Image (tube, rainbow, N blue to C red):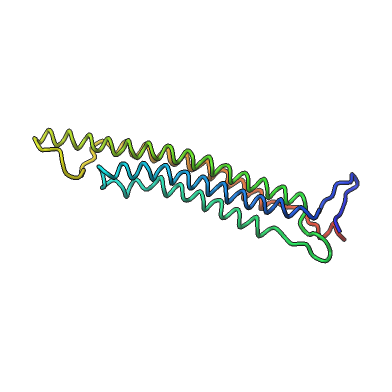
Amino acid sequence: MANESGSGFEDCPSWAPALGFLGAGACIILANWGAAWGTWKSGIGLCQMGVNHPNGIIKNLVAIIMAGVLGIYGLIVAIIISGGVTSPTADGNMYSQFTGWAHLAAGLCCGFSCLAAGAATGVAGEVGIKATGLRAELNHAKSSRGMMGSGGGEITDEGDAGRLYIGSVTILSFSGAIGLYGFIIALIITSSDHYDCQYANQ
């Protein structure tokens, strides 16, 4: 039996667990959406760059790896939220409305943060990968002309393209930090003290 406060507010309604499940579902969906978005955009740039600069594929996987981490953030928070949702018992509902709203907020916080981070990582990763590969290709062409060569073959010396790569990785680091911020706040929300219906039903 749900408990009601003096103001008529129902502390532990039967629909409260739906809020927790919505939070867990929204968290994993939005986080995976961001991870997929980042992987998609970065993957396009990596494949295009790899046509003329295959030696740079491995080190330019950073954007794809950072995009995939965003899905892990959503998975962790979704597991924590779903583990905190309790099913009704013979004594009534043990999951309070307050806890449900807190879990929903945590899920949306992490989910939308990872979605934004995935978009930023994808766009910055695609452009950064293409720019690094193009710069390395231009340096290779200049070096080949200087040596009176044909300009063909694989790119072994990237020249100053490494500076562009460092700048690209720095941008990706701050892009991925957006998802980390939402992940941390979601953990704080889920770990805070919540209303216990066990005592309210007594």
